[in-house]
Length: 335
Image (tube, rainbow, N blue to C red; front, side, top):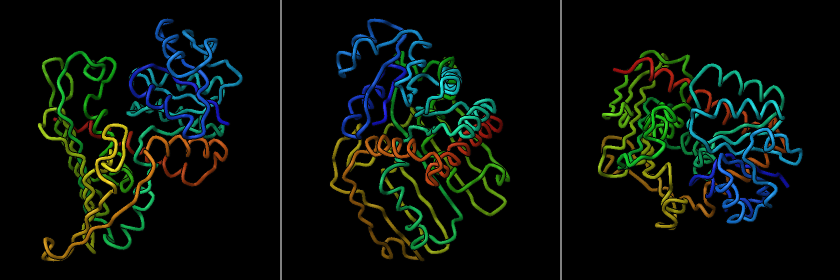
């Protein structure tokens, strides 16, 4: 059984910790800056007290440890990935990834050493994402437009995500990673012809709203939005092409079961529209999702560790790298 250690004791660290047994992964250890936090985490999730660490070298040098879940602010992720390389550990890394070229170099080094790494983007491991290529082939055809957005009303009450020193991308990395991640499935950054972005900041220089639009030399128009300032949640993806349009209204956190919503709807429902009368010419595709996304993610992580050359892993890693490049392009094009 794969043995997982977690760096960080925040909300997502707790969600992953409580999901390990169901996913067939052994929760092995925890690393926290605070001895009190480490001990509390061990007690809550049944980790042996001697596997609660406050020193990085002690945590990473544990020979029994297989894979590290990095659930820290973005500012720390590159240094922690260096330690994964140094101590030969696989890595599950919370989004967003730093968009730096040095981070990409570290990821390339990890792959060359057959160390598995994936971004902890839950939806890429769920059933609807695995069905997406078939849905596109049948209902969309040749893709020419993608519009993805994620808005979550929020206010600054001192959360880490509102600290530009810890989370330099603000909402563009926190929420924006999801629409940019799905856009990157279709668009290598080398194919981008033009891109324009608008990044709105609050009084503390935190990015609280992002809008980006661009096109590729292959004729695809893409749009991405992310916002803390909207008053209504939106997590919508529309993909259009020569046959029709695919609309997924809950692509980030499906209402059919996520750690945020629980189960509000029995199934995920994907809308299909086509032709000149889309209000009439339409249908609904029902996808039965019976497992929470983060459980599937942990299962696939273990499978990838057993087979570092798994083609699905290589595909997901390529999409992640493209997302990093797209964030960098947005940074360089904003006004």
